[in-house]
Length: 172
Image (cartoon, rainbow, N blue to C red; front, side, top):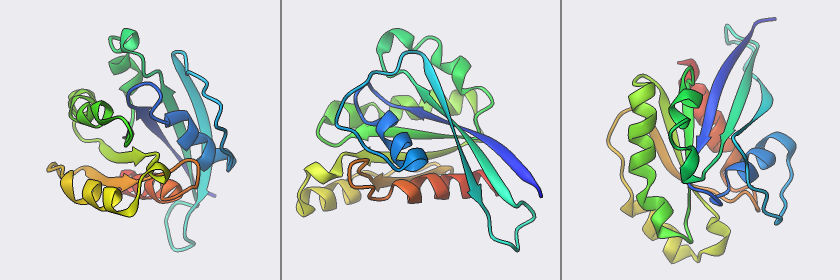
C-alpha cells in the first residue's frame, strides 16, 4: 500500500471560517461557536484514491494558520513545504475578499510552484443573486489557482470538492 503525505495550509483573515471548513471536511461537524486559532493547529485526513492510481491513499496534513495580523510575520515560515493553500474569505465581509490577493502573493512568494484554492465561505447567508454575482465577478489569472468556490461550512456546500480538487492538483 502506497501512501503519500501532502501539506495544505489554510490562510485568511480572522473569523472567515478556516477552522469550520476543516472541521466539516475532517470530522463532518459544524459548530456556531467561534474559537479563535492561536498560532497553528494541524489536522489530518486520509483520502483513499482510485484503484488505478499508483498511490493508494493521500494523507493530507492541514495546517490551520492564525488569521490575526500580529502573526503575519511568522506565516511565511508555516507556509514552507506546503504543496497547496486554501485561501478563505467571508462573503459577508468584503474586506476579507479584498485581502485574497495579499494571501496569493504571500503564498506564491514562498511556494512559487504550489497550488491554491480559493473559498468564498458562508454562502448559506447569501441569496442566489448574490452568489451568482460573486461567482462571475471574481477572476484569478495564474494557472495554479482553483476557484473561487462558493462554500459553506455550515451546510457542507463544496467543502469536500474544494479539498479533493486541491489535493488532486497537488498530486499531478
